[in-house]
Image 1 (tube, rainbow, N blue to C red):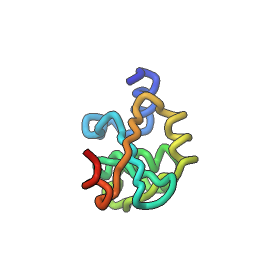
Image 2 (tube, one colour; image 1 turned 180 degrees about the horizontal axis):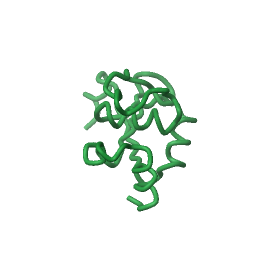
Image 3 (cartoon, helix red, strand yellow; image 1 turned 30 degrees about the horizontal axis):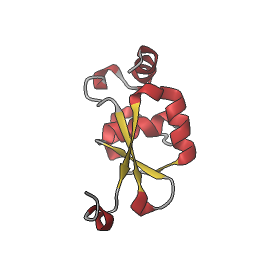
Image 4 (cartoon, rainbow, N blue to C red; image 1 turned 90 degrees about the horizontal axis):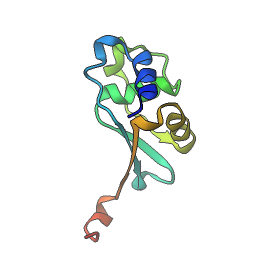
Length: 103
């Protein structure tokens, strides 16, 4: 994790939540949802932080737990990686029906 990316994250997330946010932020591709659809793995804080960084919410961190789940599309992911490259890990989820055939 690069210091520059951690500083960028610290500028966005209030100091009272610095110890609560999990790093790295895991963004998982969901093959079962369609082409190029991703979700944030983790808790509401990580999801809200991503939404906030991408400008997809008008809410503030005082009410981050009230925000619902959301999907990230490829252009959003590219922007997120550009902003905090070293804090993002991209994972790939296999639909349940296909998972049994993987060894």
